[in-house]
Length: 283
Image (tube, rainbow, N blue to C red; front, top):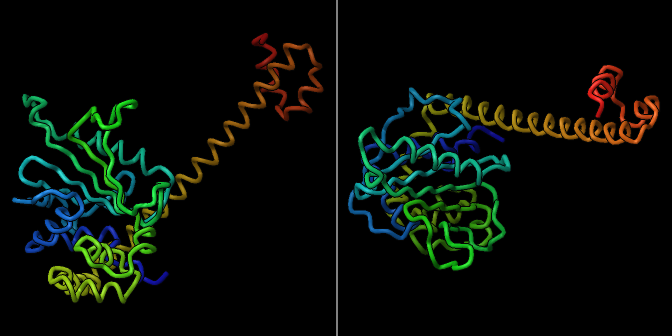
């Protein structure tokens, strides 16, 4: 994969810098209106992180965009390029973290803003046919009864979008074609049909030519791969622990049934020290 391929608008570094830039609020407002189906009267982009100060090794490799809409809704937009098989737990963890940190000392629960989390994924995780899915917490029996309001999760799966949409007619389709940047013909159509997408294209061309942005992307890419391999190593260790526990449980059952130590050792592969401990416990 070339550096230029890494620097598509769905790259989290590019996405955050493109849509958090002063003067680009109208772009983000249109994406939010089309994606969440809400009227955006006012928008405030949190600029707590500048390009030069971004910490590439942030927990879970997150580099999201936070937006306050109409003063009472917090919209979190995150790009995810790599499937680590834990997206639902990550989204839940992060939503809880945002909720906990949003309430200041002496404020009541009424001060908590509604939170809408938009996860734009470069892979598929849901079995549903639609490329855009929004979720709510409902009663298990009465599905139409929403138990907890004020928090919603949105998942946009770009591979499904790519398969289903060939002619981006709606504004949301035009923005997703641009963000995905995999089908040049679709990107050109989006630029021709939407003046804000055309503006985004010019800013995108500038960002991808910036040396600081390219260097940050290299660091971010390393952090993402490091996270992935750490996850794989953790999974392997978990499997090893499971196998070891199975051997111990087998040995315990054999000891209970008064099977000879020699046979137990050959059957389970446990070493002498491990067997000494089990026999000492008189399982």
